[in-house]
Length: 572
Image 1 (tube, rainbow, N blue to C red):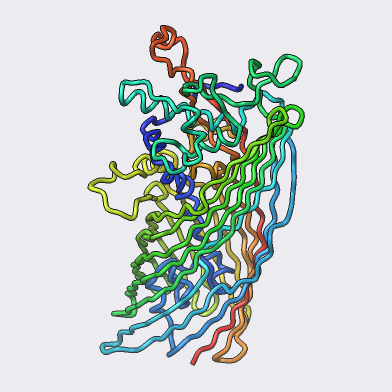
Image 2: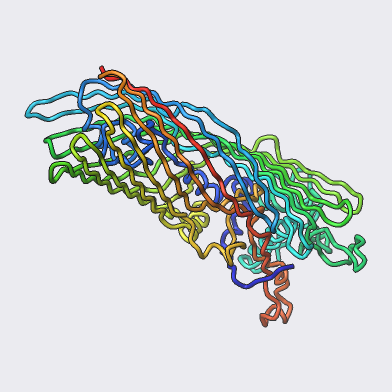
């Protein structure tokens, strides 16, 4: 097995293994995955300018950058409808094996919006806006296979490590050796017990792991072979010769905006927006390790997460001189109340003997999610009726993402998600996004537009070792072991707008985007199985230490997307 001494583990999380159903719900990677899906759609003009409309305003699309912008609308009413097409493709490298494939093409409605402006006394103005938009997509596909040298850890090593660590943690806290007997983890009612991790149940009943003592103790993978490559219960544990992973994620976030803009003077603009968000997410994971001969292990999981939440945005725009606009905005987290459904099944064939296990038919749970705070700075310069140059900067505080139970606790530290939240702080930082857009009026009726967007990765570099391996354990949704570390995003956009009549306009836009990420089949883990026997002098002296299980290297992914949108707008 590959070993290293760069990782670390917070043993306190192992106490959560005594709450198997909760641990099966979600972890830090689920929280960040849901929170990082936000990618606000908008009109074709918004899209062509790469979303740099915080200080440009006017349109309802600008509500996601600075809600004060809607007060810049002149005229009575505005109605817009935006349609789009998304064509994604993927390429990845895993152990020098390359593959490319296309994702599912989608043709969704991007945004529908209604705005109304009304003059008030003293030359001021009040504007209202209602908008429905796609605010994020979870679409992601990883379909990978790797030929290995049997020296890497397998998914069975990870399941054995979870089991050993649970025994170790309980034993350390109680001062009494506390092991998981075969009769307990193998019982037909094991899933109803609160003191058995689901990973242990699946690993043992699925035929992946075992221990030499039926009373429990040190668990290890059941894939052991002698020097001739034949299966032997007294042989050495081997890693897989082939690993196959299929991960499919889909779903979206739909936002409903209710906004108010106030223009107390010609140089000051204020705005607020209340947003209701509906989230819908589904995923499927199929993973297989193939060993000697026909020996294998296989895991299949399905997850669905759905629910809704609210957030508030506040913004201001100031015009210090003619043509120059400066703005700032702040958006609270979206406070979600979510429901989680989970199903898993595991199987194996070891030396011709097949085993399988399935989770209970329903593993529904409820939990709360708080997404990051967002802070924005906006700037634009209007060159009369000839052009507009705009720049937006946004900082999303991903380290502030939080999980919580749907019941109140006296303190966050008492929550079963307390350690997950600490890991979010440790592993994730802020995401910086810079957007720039330029609009030029080629004629009084024709506008040409272009833009650029860059978003940094919210992941701390210390989360990775040598770029390929995890440097510490990522807390996943238990049996849904695969997780993705989101990378930086770069995109270029272009478009044009044409005023068909004084009241009807047509706008079109195109965006080319690239994001590089890393997907792991299962987490790195530090296995405390070798030090379970605290009476061993070599354990007491530190000669025998916990074993670092690297897992497999990351699948290096590149997602390329082509998106086209068209907007028809009507003023009346």
